[in-house]
Image (cartoon, rainbow, N blue to C red):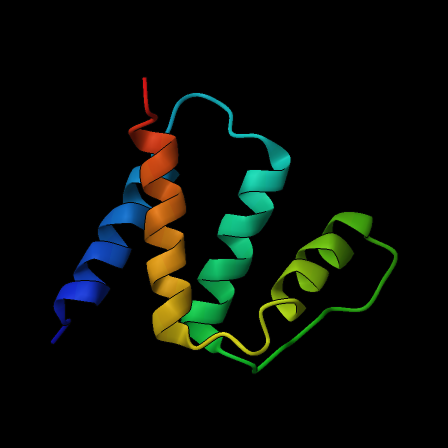
Length: 88
């Protein structure tokens, strides 16, 4: 059973996933890192190779190594809300 934070996190993920307009790559990278930290914590995995994009994604996730999954969920929700409901 999901708690309120988990429900809000899943809802934010679904809203971001359904966006039609493009989101800046640096923001997408932050969302990716928060999502990975929220779901996997410090259990880092990286498929080695020469894919620069994956290296950036892995680096962004590694930068959150001291963040708890709960905090990562909160940060993901906060960032997603700024994208979905920007201040006018």
